[in-house]
Image (tube, rainbow, N blue to C red; front, side, top):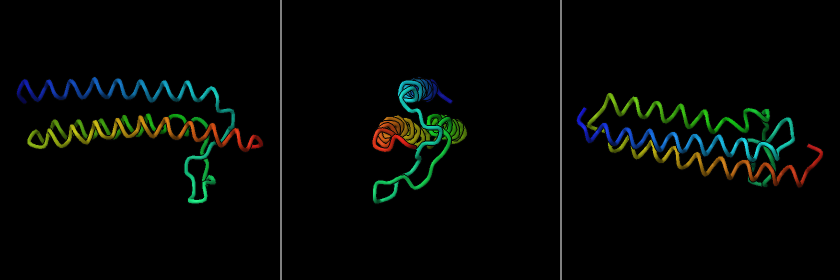
Amino acid sequence: MDSASSDVIAATLIALAIGLTFIAGCAIYYGRRITSRRIPIQWGTDGQPTWFVSRFIGLWCSFGVTAALSAFLLVLALHEPQKLTALIVATVSVIGTNMWAQVYHLKRVIRWQAEAPAN
């Protein structure tokens, strides 16, 4: 692997560290405002929750998915250097998407909790 490829992978690892720190920060920050033991993880077309998971899984699932998918894509980039650019773009896309999804999901859970405090 040449120096340029190593630099790109290093930059991607920095982006991953920033993304995982952001996702963990959201889990901690918004998690303090979520008091329900079980929280919605998916909503139906009517806007109502379709299924629930434990609070811990709901808060930290995005972190685990981001770490696992990014690790897989980075390992693949090391073994398939001719596809480095595409795999790095995919990795950064996974990180960015999961950062957005974490914020959106946790804000939605907080709104759901406020509308239905008996949950």
